[in-house]
Length: 382
Image 1 (cartoon, helix red, strand yellow):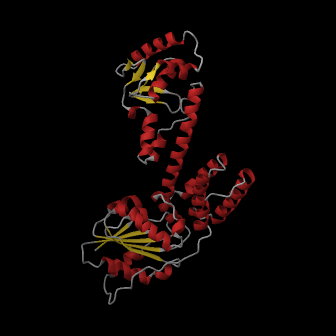
Image 2 (cartoon, rainbow, N blue to C red):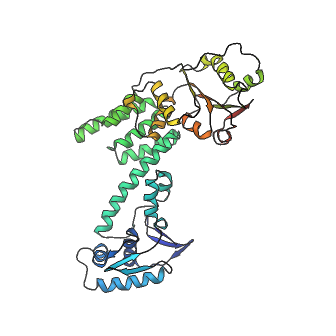
Image 3 (cartoon, helix red, strand yellow):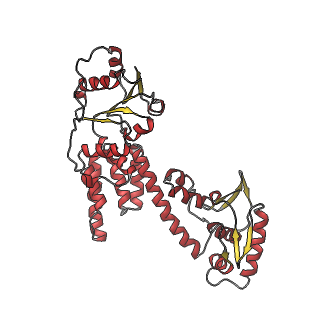
């Protein structure tokens, strides 16, 4: 049995809707579900369902409602204990508690999938109104976390319209404003990002008498006013390189990602570096290189952000925001990125640009099938 408190409250056994009575009886159930596995005193139940001045017959009505709920929820106990009632069930079966647990586990996409509408829709009273306001804040925070993850995945184009709508509803939310700026930059709309920041700065000054906060100012400086550094990180080209004509021709084919794989000693790095030096002029905004080995990709992202011209104090602290910033910095550049000696696909994915303007060459002893199937990489096998 599953319980839904987002949107109109309802109970389902499998796909079948369980009849749990009228709105007042449903309110009693909702109160017990919010404090699942905890005793809710009778006086507290009365106050939450009927308000601070419940009618004289409310206590008798409560006993009747609990009895009917026990019948409707056959198999889910509502136990009388210590002057109150406790509904005993797995919190994961209640969407509200499942939502909160997913947020705590940093899984905002799954959490947001549970949100069907306004919590406790159709239930009235001061207590429900206050809880509804609290949950609205929690949902908004989860939505922001989800958006950061989507930006980190390179979904800039699809987010621009969505974030434009959200910022019109919450025009002074600076975190949301920063997300819109990152989406605009990633979508190649630098002028729009500059204009949006300017309008927001004036609105904050006019309505609140404030400047944008340090996080938004740092983001503006790193994304909009950053120096156009062009790093040249390739190691020297291998001497006396010869052969591998077919492999070099394969590398010349179009495609934003290519993998060079094979056993140790087959010349993967030599091939990658020879090709990279031969084609460096095709990537006028520079080249990034890292020998991955056992490196943490989060550390490499920070190194690349710094190499692209962002000062350390302009790098956001959250890993997903760092990945979003890295992809934003690359969004309007044409660069070559060589990721040497990758351990597996998971190590590479955070280092991929969000747009196809850049070229990524990955070498590895493993075949990296995840890059081929999920990211369209072309394999070159030695």
